[in-house]
Amino acid sequence: MSVPVLRSAHVYPVKSLAARACDTVAVEPWGLDGDRRWMLIDKAARAVTQRQQPSLARIAAEPLPGGGVLLSAPGFPSLRVEGPESGRMLTVELHRDTVVLEEAPGDAHDWLSAVLGTEVRLVHLDEPSHRRPVDP
Image (cartoon, rainbow, N blue to C red):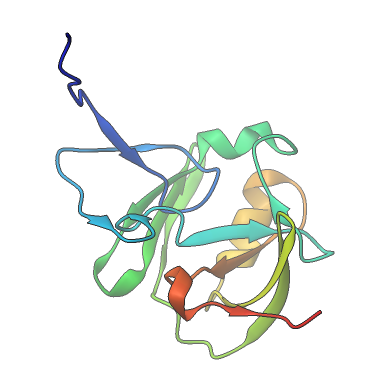
């Protein structure tokens, strides 16, 4: 009988951006710590993934203390996005669910839209027990 061996661990600080290799990562009840805590949405407030935008894979996100991320992409200056503090909540379609999530502060939307060549917004997905579902 073979013994399973974990050879690598990867997280996606921003859903669908480039993966980030981890030497160690904490496992929370809802998944890997820091994994997919941010995501992009389109004009209709639907999640944007690499299926619709393959160029998302060329954008990197490095976690920062306090829940923020440092975004980088070839040909663009890096952008520091602080942890969620805007207080502006948006109703977002995430797969088959509708949830209320917090919009990113600062220039993140403009920076990401310029990199991708299409309008997107960055939102923060708090750990699942704090997410607010929208009543049908």
